[in-house]
Image (cartoon, rainbow, N blue to C red; front, side):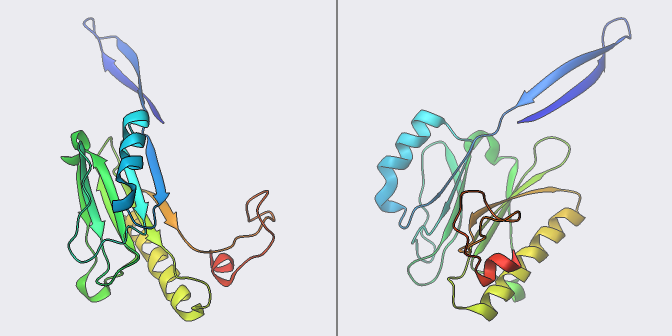
Length: 191
């Protein structure tokens, strides 16, 4: 929830305070095949009315786009099956939303970033899908690309929300997640 106080002058020139509360609902899921989950997704949309839906492992291919009424869909599909990312933004926000495209020389198949221009500073929603354990060099390259993308966004003075399936084990120590298993993978150490 974003809270801010606006100071505006009233009829007699005195400053008035007005509180603006803006709640943003975001739903995230690693769907492992979005087309077979249509009914469940529509039920979630009806019951929760999220402003933004974020999905990993859509299994969409090439230019395939999964649509839900009332949302604008942004996708990053793989050429071959499996994987795939999607961010859906409510239609009323779509006019203020753009997809941030990668430099063609540095295209990363498992990063999708959209920018929403709401308020003074835009917010970037970045969703990622991490390499599976066992690909040590590729994991390092992937995390470096994610880090670079976050730094680029922050240098522009914008906010970033990172959502996704990183496929890492972060443990349960002070840097991990309480109640989690204790194992820390190579990717978890990098994170």
